[in-house]
Amino acid sequence: MKLPTEVEGRQQLADEIHARPFEPLSTPGAALAVATLREGPADDARCIAHLARLGGDATEPGNAMQHQVRCGALRVRWERHTEFHTFTVFADLDSLAMDRAFDTGWLDALPHDWLATLPGRMISATQLAVLPCPGNPPHARVVAPLFCSELLVGNRVADGAATVVSDLRSVGGVTRFLVFDHAMNRRRAGRTVQRLIEVDTYRMMALLSLPLATRRMGQLAVEETQLASLMARFHDATDGDEVLLHELVTLAARVEYAMAEHSARFAATRAYSGIVDRRLIELRETVVPGLQPLSEFMERRFRPALDSCAATAGRQTQLSERIARAAQLLQTRSEVERERQNQALLGSLDRRQGMQLRLQETVEGLSVIAMTYYGVGLGNYLLKPLAKAMGWHETAVTLVAVPAIALLVLLNMRRLRRHLQSPDT
Image (tube, rainbow, N blue to C red; front, side):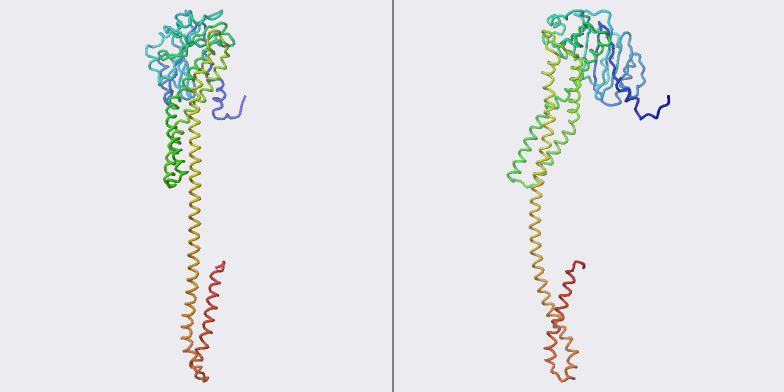
């Protein structure tokens, strides 16, 4: 069947729904998952090469997000995520006693330094043991010695098909879960184990921003105090606008730099916490008497840490908005002051223009007199011979010429002024 040309990457989009499938796991069984931070795309090739030490294919799987090899009876799977890698080792065991549930002898098939030399820095390590338990799970007092802790959490999961018990503590860098299988098949056991691994891994990824939030809270307190001081000086008008604007711009730059540097981390925390919530819902928990439910423990301990991160991100955004409003107020006052100065300047220009107009009129009057004087002087040279021929006295000719010439000069000056004042000129 011939089909049209595909959109670039269509097959990858179609396969996205099948990405990261659950690994079936028999009961009894064990799993160990280690998550390491992903520094960049170059780490992917290092991970594939590390898998090749177990006898797998060293070829990089292109855009694939996972790769799996076998090492004896063990199944080792690598998965690539946006910010981290996960290496998960699965083992189907013939038998597993409860008092030895967290023994790691089954990992002896791996090279002795393979786990220690995993690429990247470890963010979480999760060990799970799946034990058959046809009836009710053992009491918490019986399970507690395995964890060396009296503080256990757990509940029924998978609609009652299994019971999960853990202390959610990192002992030797590893968080341990004990799963009692009441009525799970291999695929359901694999899904349950994978969800518990993701709860622990994404919990740690979400908490990466907590130290940042703690440190940023102290910085925000200082920046908010500085902004309050600036606004008090703005209100009291104790400093010039240029000084306030310089300090405000410096503060705004510092806050915006912090937001640009940390916003991605806080956004990732929100995303990871959402995944943790969804995985807890997918476990479909029911309460076991004597145990605090896993979701309740996470809500009581995990949620406040996330709230602190969210509060820091929100407080940071609010501070940025307050600085923007302060800048607008300062700009408004500067514009009002500038408008006042412009009005004073225009008033000064009006006064100067009036003075120039009066000076111009004075100059025009003097010009009329001067031009009349020179006009009369020139006219006398022409009119005196005529006056002698006609028998007129020379003084009479001058008396008649003065007003006539002055009138002509004045009329010509007014015509010239009207011409200069015309909008078409």
